Length: 80
Image 1 (cartoon, helix red, strand yellow):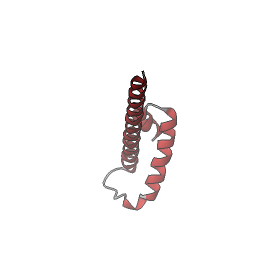
Image 2: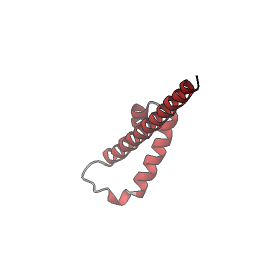
Image 3: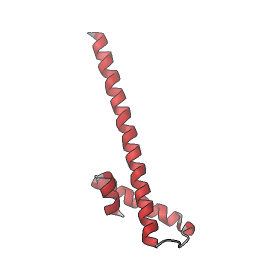
Image 4: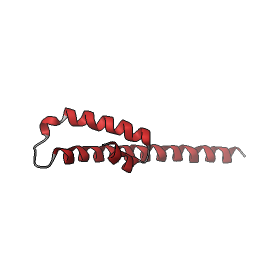
């Protein structure tokens, strides 16, 4: 799971945290495993989804920082 997440998020800490969350999620949803696919495939899918979620969250945070930076720049320009 860690290697899958690291390949997606490209950050060791995020991959570690994501792997931990993916294991917890798998445990919580163990009853929904139908056995149509291998168990490892199911776990990998959970890890991929966790990685995607973390990328979306990081992208949103980066956009917010960018908007704040632009707003601060505009305020600074108005003062001069």
